[in-house]
Image 1: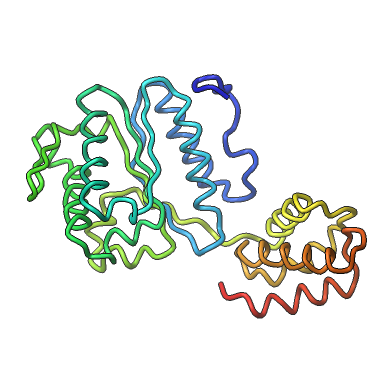
Image 2: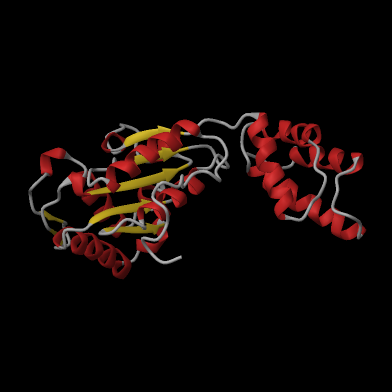
Length: 263
């Protein structure tokens, strides 16, 4: 679908199960940007398998449909080297000088600190100043001479997503620049619904709610085991050459496999 043609009234998070509070807060920011207002710079945290990447991607896709809003999604390894880092800073500079609202999404954000390269250090310093109200309306200059024009926090936002927020900094100074949003663990019912979608995507039929909930119990709050179990069940059924339905033996094997899948 072409840019700007998605119905603005459609809920971009309708296909994401659970995390209702986070979805409501992101929808609020999305509505603000649609009406010409600001969005918050967010630190989105969650254990692995609790939907942070899905939420971030849905939010990014919805923002990208708004005229004069530039979005970009990166992972830290994409701007470890000088060329990528300079290009990213130039993109920010172009958005600001061109009067475009920008939202930058960074997945696995803890790596911007743990990698410890020169350009990571430059980036961290830039982010700390960009999101500090004390630097509003001032020219920012990195130690390597890359100049960023005056930054107005109301004209852009940075979304960090990570499973390991404690790796960003021990003092909390880095994290304090963001509005932190902690995702909750999934309920068994939510995991059952997620497992059902995964199995249907793999062409399984006649899935019983009690069966799904029994398997979902071993997820221990995250969907990561559900995806691996769905793949395992597909392999089992393909090897048998039978219909893609679940029987007692498959269920017991799936539950046993849960023990081998770390969170």
